[in-house]
Structures are given as structure tokens and as C-alpha cells.
Length: 185
Image: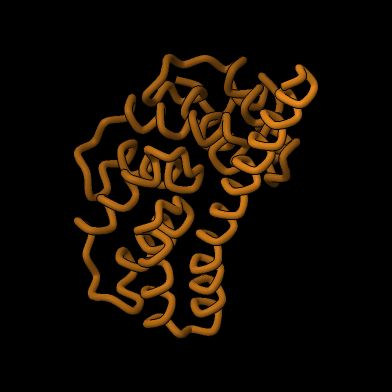
């Protein structure tokens, strides 16, 4: 068998495998999208079923959506234990909204023991994943020294990043002077 033929076969196999992975991912997104469509129509029973299906198939966005439904009691009985389990699973998959929400729970001690350092770590991961709200919160955490060492320069950096990514940050939070005035000890 010629060298060219071997390379062609290997390349064809790689393309086939990658197309299969993409197709599988797209198929796993269908129930999550159906869940979102049902949720928007306030058909919470269908939304829970579809999010549950997608969640069992490993869809992190569906885990987050289902967690919020358990927190709010929409289509299911309100169950914070189940919601926190789903949030934790979504965080393990780096779902940025779950990272932010779970991080805020730890910062403020909502439904979990207060642990500002752990909360800041989760919010940081969401910010790095380009969640503008997480960037904004990181700015406040650094400015106040909550869960991280107080650092107004980093606070300003996070605020500027949040603004760059679309969060409506007030002008005074974009300068060191403004942050110093707001977060004076």
C-alpha cells in the first residue's frame, strides 16, 4: 500500500470520527433546545422532561436550566438539594452561568456554608469564560477584598472587562479614584 493511500485512509478515518462527534453533540443539544422552547411557552412540565433528558446525556446548559427550575419550583417541587447537585455537575463541566450562581451562593452563604474564597474562585472561572456579570462581580470582590485579597487595580481591570463584554458598568467603577471612593475602608 502506498504512503499516500495510507495517509488518505488515516485522514478519512479522522474526518469520519470528528464528524461523528459533532453530530452526536448536535443530537444531544436537541432536547435542551426543546426544553428552552417549552420553558419560554411556560410549559414547565415539558421543559423539565426535555432538560432532564439532555441533562442525563451530559448537557451542562440543561443541567443549569433544570437547576434553576428546581430552585424556583417551576414544573417540579422546589428542591434546593437537587438544584445544588445539578449546579455542581454543571460547574464541573465549566458551565459559566452555573459557575457564577454557585459562586454567589458561596460568597453570600445562600443555601451553602459561607465560603467567599471558594465563591470567588467559581466566579473567577465564569469571568474567564467571558461571563460579563461574573466579570462585574469579580471587580466588586477585588475592590472589597471578599474571597480575594483587596486589589483596586484588579478590580478596575475586571470592571473594564465587564464593560467591554457588554455589562453596563457605571463610570465611577472604571477608575481607581472612583473605586477608592466607593470602597474606602
